[in-house]
Length: 232
Image (cartoon, rainbow, N blue to C red; front, top):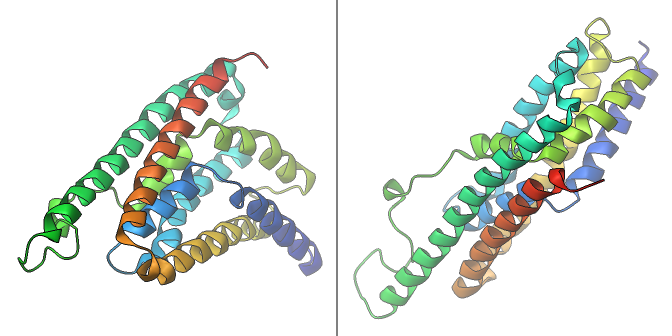
């Protein structure tokens, strides 16, 4: 495949990815929440979340070119993914709300305390059990049935249109790099902007944002779990 052809595949894949990344969804909401609660290197949170998302997409992309994911086209697959995904997102959303409430309680307690280490309004990091951002990125993506639907419809159509196969591995690499760079660019921009501006955000607002993200993720989960059962 010529360089011009590879550039077309890369560019179109980048634009397709960016158009999807700009749409609000569970992964964007989780990225915002993770950045707001990160003590250090919060600006990297978007890239770390997308890393797990990219790993999942790499496996799925290989499955598509090998033709081993046809079962995802079955209606029952969307229903199973929707229900399991709804439960997972509900679990993660409840965790965010609990963390926001715990942070609020500690903030109120520290207002009348002079004990060192209480000013931050946080528990020691060792007492917190959190998923690694990359693992969470993969799980959040996996829990969204529309992630799978996009790949078996739009993604598959793109691969066929440009004859992206294992034999034409240069086109496969160009497609994957373009797609993932769109995600990495946008989510890194979001987390960097949030991290740099976090110092100017009141602590109460941070708590509300974290709790709000939890509610939104639960809402996404409920919608994603119910929608596959609704008539088209």
